[in-house]
Length: 198
Image (tube, rainbow, N blue to C red; front, side, top):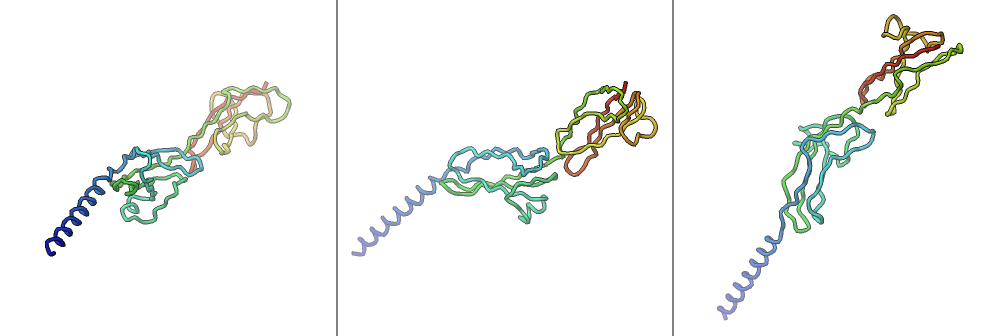
């Protein structure tokens, strides 16, 4: 009787060990996540996530957390799952959790920079108007939601003397300087235009 119980116990233990080994072997390596460790983008007023591509479908979704500094990342402090929108430098942790038959993977750290957006001022280099006694303002457009200022000067060969208080109205050659000063979101830009009133 004792031998039968011992044999049965040994068989059950062997089966349990075999099942555990099978389960352990069934776990796959964590999926590869393709993500550059240094990423840059330009400000656009919207939240912008980093680029991260998981190599295998069906694997657990990576957990991405954004931090304002490397110190916060290492302390796991003040992290956010929401991508940032403001200009600045960020540190991002990509965590690969276990699940769906995959083992957990090592964390990936990404340095993420949102840079000031460029401002492009579009205007014809020379603009001519017919004299009618009214002020003549240069025509231009910008590709961002900013409002550049315009200064007008006498002479077409450069900025000389004090700027005019308003767009010119008298016959002559003038130079207009369209400029946008850098702010927290956009880089500075300028463009010169020759303005002629005949």
